[in-house]
Image 1 (cartoon, rainbow, N blue to C red):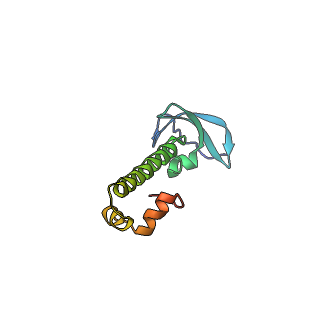
Image 2 (cartoon, helix red, strand yellow; image 1 turned 180 degrees about the horizontal axis):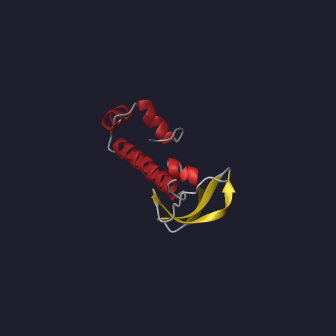
Image 3 (cartoon, one colour; image 1 turned 120 degrees about the vertical axis):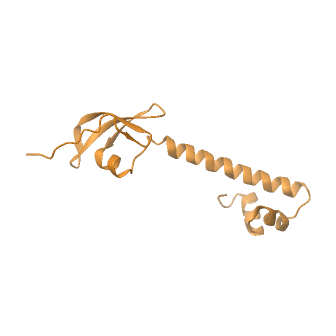
Length: 114
């Protein structure tokens, strides 16, 4: 006698909406076909859905990475504009709230800009 399967069809977990169950199992977990808000369909096990470990098809991570890249570019442009207007690294750093060493690291591309 097996455990009772809770029907998750139609429920929403983050960006994922459960469409239907899959006949295969993953370590006793039911696998569910889910439709992401972006339109992609993914297969997720019930444990990850219920715990909130999986909330999208991966599009959220892609969007987050793009926003980080945009903020890095913006920071670099701010530094370059300050330096072009005659400020030195020290005053540019004070204006942006970072250290002069960080200004040099950002401009030289040795470290990630956050």
